[in-house]
Image (cartoon, rainbow, N blue to C red; front, top):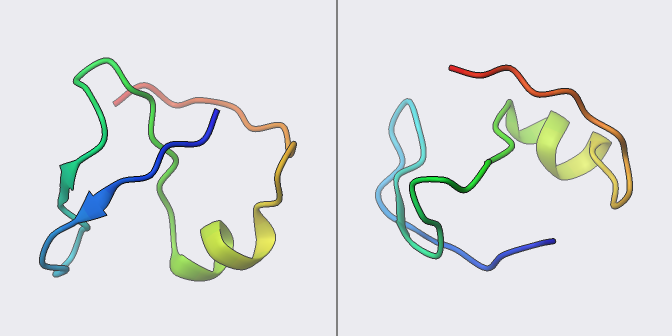
Length: 49
């Protein structure tokens, strides 16, 4: 499901301050990909890093 998170200062990456645990999977990418192209219910694949 979706979680509400609080982000900190943005530089090259967002810094999530609250809302996730170490085991939470997070979708990352360019703003346009995450905010405009990724729609609820879209299937994604994971890349463990």
